[in-house]
Amino acid sequence: MAHGFSDRSMREQQPLIKQYVDLLMAKLRQAEGKKVDLAAWYNYTTFDVIGDLAFGESFGCLEGGEYHPWVKAIFELARVGVVFQSLVHFPLIFKALLAVIPKSLMEEREKHYQMTLVKLKKRMEGGKDRSDLIEGLLKKADEWGLTLQKLQANSAILIIGGSETTATLLSGVTFLLMTNPDALKKLTAEVRGAFRSEDEIDFMSVSNLPYLLACLDEALRMYPPVPTGLPRVVPPPGASIAGHYVPGGTVVAVHQWAMYHNEENFKKPFEFHPERWLGDPEFASDRKDAFQPFHLGPRNCLGRNLAYIEMRLILARVLWNFDLRMDEDSADWMSKQRIYNLWEKGSLNAYLTPVQR
Image 1 (spheres, one colour):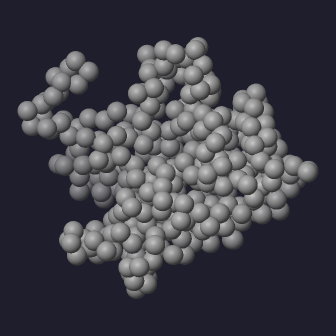
Image 2 (cartoon, one colour):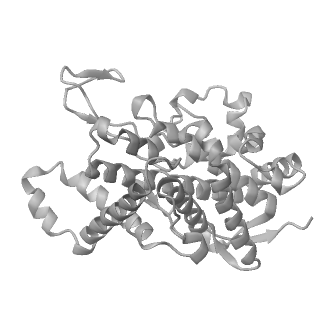
Image 3 (cartoon, one colour):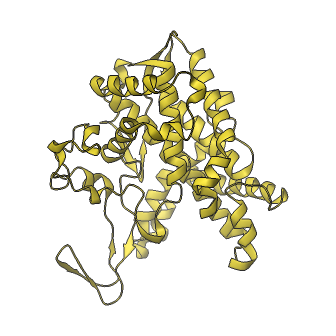
């Protein structure tokens, strides 16, 4: 699957991704003067993109202005996942606890997997030669012993990991910019000063906007889309972690949010300062090696290239086209959220004023 996320592959998919960003801009223009839930519209966009990249058809979220039933099931599944992660630590009472889980949650879990299976089978009927994210898995299925069940599991992870996390970061950076007007003004000036027309805003050109990348990285630090940590099991002999002996078989993790808000790692960790990523001497003591939002090693996030491309392109296009003003009812948008592995986001309401040129 790694080939599908390479720089070259992403460049080849630029026309496909652009068409959904174009549609997002059109939908936002139609909302002129009205309160807009940007968190929802970012989700509509990233789910439509990953649906087309993976299965050859979008979910139709942007066109309909609402979540596809599968997408709704995915959000419910995030809660179910946390419950199951907790249950595995209590094997003696596992069955008893399962009995008290609301039936609706179990139904949402099954709905997600069934919808994944339907999409996957339809994609498989289309052959192995379509250049998309599933292509590599289909071509290697026999060699790697990938059963339909394994393909289904990988597809389900692909849909969640390739959409929700990107939309969450876009929502987070938009909120942080609207609550830090100086940063918003500076980034808006960078975007509008770099291009003569909207047509010039593409994959390559947005990579030349340093303050844009700094804002995205600072948002990743303050509001990592996966704020928890991926669990790892200490090997049998045990290991020394941070100067402490940890027995083999122990489940450990480095939690992103805690790491990035530790004053030993980052100065003024609860403040939004994109300048820390641009060499500002005030933040010279920051331990930037602690910043690993896409993780490290063979299990790092394959979707990093896609995520940065979408985030840069969408945020640049939004700021090129609109002046942003947050609605008062979203002032505490970030502080009131809960975590179920992923953030449970509420509506991020804002007013968008089209720029007159």
